[in-house]
Image (tube, rainbow, N blue to C red):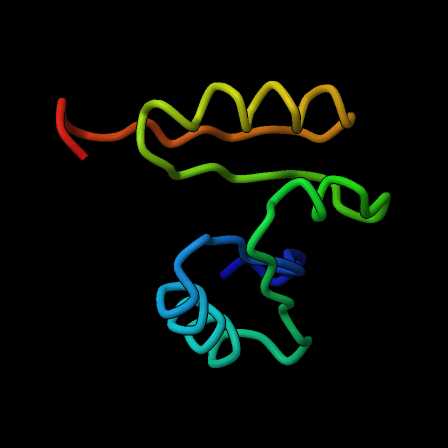
Length: 84
């Protein structure tokens, strides 16, 4: 992880995956990372600068558009295959 980057939130509708992700982040940084089931709640936080999206192909565009409308920088990781 870059020394000047802090992961403030993770979002996933699957509680088990979200918990796994939060545990991974907790091992990599000293600050607390908060989990959100609804990513739109993250967009309300004015201190969030950027959003990284890695979702199935039918979600990455709507999420990216909402994030850009909220004034966030956006990185979209498209799926690497035709089926997710």
